[in-house]
Amino acid sequence: MVLKDLTPAERQAARQKALDARTARAKVKTDFASGALSLAAVFEQSDIDDAVARMRTIDLLTSLKGIGEIRAQGIMEQCDISPNRRLRGLGHRQRKALIEALGR
Image (cartoon, rainbow, N blue to C red; front, side, top):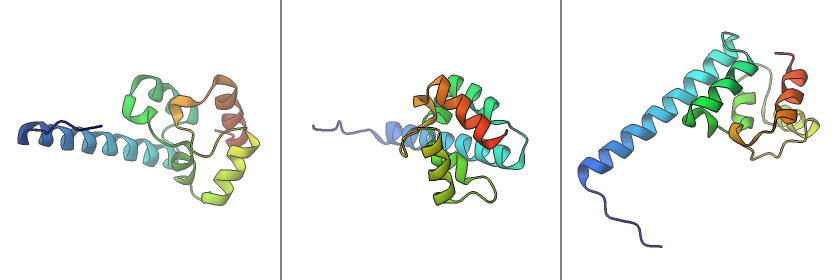
């Protein structure tokens, strides 16, 4: 597949869009970790915001204090969630199981 050559303006716009998406995901993770945002609110935001919807579930879990990569994988396994699943790809049963597992 051959990619289209981008003009400098298009390239800059793409960089800005990527930066905005990373910033939005970082804000959601810090708000979630601090307790300002519940897991249900994160799921609601992922239904609206495309940048948040593309966040990996394991990245969101590891933003919490005391939950590392291994513990997050265990929680996801307990909730029948694939390790590379993104927030958009979670079904309502998986979301409910994750909320119950975290108690948030």
